[in-house]
Length: 502
Picture (cartoon, rainbow, N blue to C red):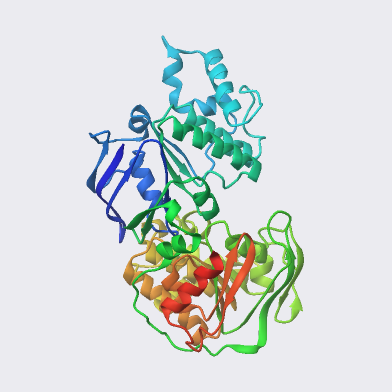
């Protein structure tokens, strides 16, 4: 039904999709899988008209498609359930469901709200929600909002339906209800494209699996011929240069960070681990496994937990990111540099200096010492080889790799001894990736910093980390030791990590 031929999409410095060809058939649930950065979201956005491919063609029932926007996709009976919850909080439930279809209900410039609410009620019942479509959406739970997004997609009467992590906010009961709907649509001849990191779900409801890796198409297999382990191997096994960067001088006598019996309702249960001086400790796991959630507990952004955190042998009381930074010299380089890590409209100087303002403020004038701020920013620009014309350059105009270096510089400037670095090279080119890898290695090897490296890039993790914790369902499902002494090759290590994921 839906055919993609030779799809190519490039962003500055990054080839997100490289000659991808795929076919999705009617009456079939087809899983699209891959690690973070594999190209899944980019491909989905091209199918839905949100992005336009640089090269390649797309056909629906033999007819070539040239979408200008998402409206064109809706008009061609293609719809999507987005991974991120996207609602208008102050609008009604019915209006959210029919937002992209309001023209169906307008006549002579007036909208028939009674018809919208009546039809919305029908689709709400399909997803198991007994709520009034006239109510506002704001007070509803994340799960209810997710189901409303599914109702919105169903209301399009789509012949091709894309489901991007549709169960991320749902309970098992709600997910079971969704699977009933998906199977019903399958029997009605709808082509369903299902994106999920929950491989149990994929094997339960999907007919076929296609895997992308580093923007390239790896292959398609029938689910009945696959196990979880085989899917994981397709996702993370790859050709890579087996580059051994050397041995870190990890001081096992100095625990710089220790977590004991960490518990959070609905997520972690009695989680324990330690980080040593001069170590790069890897966190690996699929999306939603708990890696970033744990990081945000450690830095005080999420306070809802019990258990104990020790830093340099003393029990830590971290109730905010300011506590983690100024009391314990613990920093966090966010995976989302554009929204959480940087102020894109501000200068390089401001972004680097923001963590040290408290230290360089003139107590009498109540003003930041601008000379010290500029000098510190210039020092970091030189040290990390950030490509700028000057420290007054706007961060939003830098390349992705240089933005990431600024994000790192911010925490290094503050003198952090412990750094949590989350997905450090997502969206950067190969040259910048190598440079960032060297920076991370030098921080541990030369400066004796202790680093938690959260990465979905298997070669990156195998190259840099000297011990790796594998996360699954908010638990540490396995630990890979011996990396520092090079007891394993890349293939052996990736196989071991995959075994812990299965």
